[in-house]
Amino acid sequence: MMTTGLAEGNAYSNDVLPTSRPKVLFLAYYFPPLNSSGCVRTWNIAKHLSRLGWEVTVVTPDPNLWRNQNDPIQANFNFDRECIKRIPTGHRWCCLTPGHLKCSDSAVGKLFGGVCRKIARSLGLELTIGWEREAEVACAQLSPSNVDIILVSGPPFIGFKVAKSLSARLGCPYVLDYRDPWIENGNETRWNNHVVRSEQAKIIEASSAVTVVSPSLLSWRFNIGTKEHVISNGFDPEELRDVKPHEFGHFAIVYTGVFYPPNRVITPVMAAIRRLSEICSFRNGRIREWKFHYYGPETDHVLREAQAFGVTDNVIVHGRVSRAESLSAVRGSGLSVVIASILDQVIEAERYIVTGKLFEALGLNTPVLFIGPPGSDVDQVAEMTGLVQRLPAKDVEGMAAFFHEVMAGKIPAVRKLDAYTWPNLIKQFDNVLRQAIRKSTSLG
Image (cartoon, rainbow, N blue to C red; front, side, top):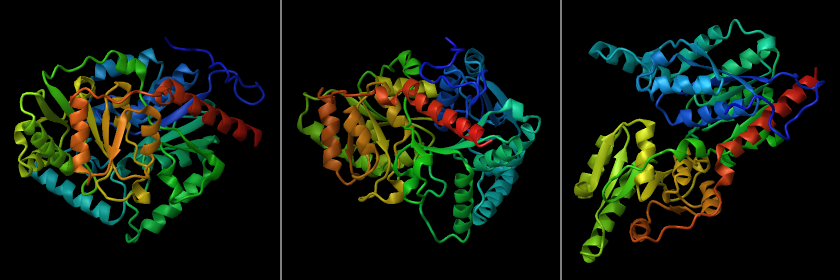
């Protein structure tokens, strides 16, 4: 049910904040019905802020621009149910992001798009640069009375620039939400990196607050101080409650999502699958049937590695599927795999990686093998929840042993998951936004 009043414990005085529902303008490039993992956080922020008494207006590309959508009719129903308004925008230069945006699929169109992407990358431009002007145009009719605060989630970080511009025009504060770092790989050799860092520093300085998904995301580059707030990714119990398990008919090890070579590839998992096959062959007749299932667009990579390790008989690829199918597969599986990095040692630029699909598996009570080096932020999640086994990519024997143990019924005990539910996480966002409005109002 929609909550029309303010959340208990968040009351504010009439001389500091508006007496009506506070208004947040949410710049969310990735947003339903787009079929992308980036939509999970933005949707839950919008949904649960609305339930805490906020008037939420989302600025996002027109759904008709997206190639892959998750049930747009259901998405529209959800927007109406949660009282979430949208300002749809156009998008220029769609050929720069052909994976998400509709553009020409002809041979000439693909060639043109490839050339444009190469030029954009050489200049250090964000491939979503075509959204900046369109988002500003779509918000041109907004006045200061329409917005109390601006919240923007990135990537893409072109939205951060839009937020800063709108903040100056509308005379309201803005808050930055980082799902990933702006300069992700820490490569200092590109000529424009110093320009990006300088621009990022200015946007952060002018913001009222910065939220990050994990403690290490920005700390290796910036010392933001009290302006920074760690608000983890999480899961929505309401959404996961009705997910029906896929009936595999055997013990299923599942990986959902994409890869980011060379640091995030399926190779170590295929090595562990081969070792598991060897273990099972030694114990013929005492091991249940099992398979590894991949859900995502990079089927060629998975099949190529499966063939290299000689385990194609134990690997099934499903290609790109809807979010509902993906969640059903994780709930029906015996174990879910998440890959952060196959490096032997954690590097500062990747210490932050605690991907959102980890929390969906936790919310579905599915054990997780998390592949990453020690010393990353995921260790805290593993310690708190109990369902996560983190192992380095080189520990093939350990991964195969974990697969075998869970297959044999030795499932890790669940400890504490409440901290990672969106109804609890959103209270932190609510507090950050209200404090930012109070501070802005008190400063005149």
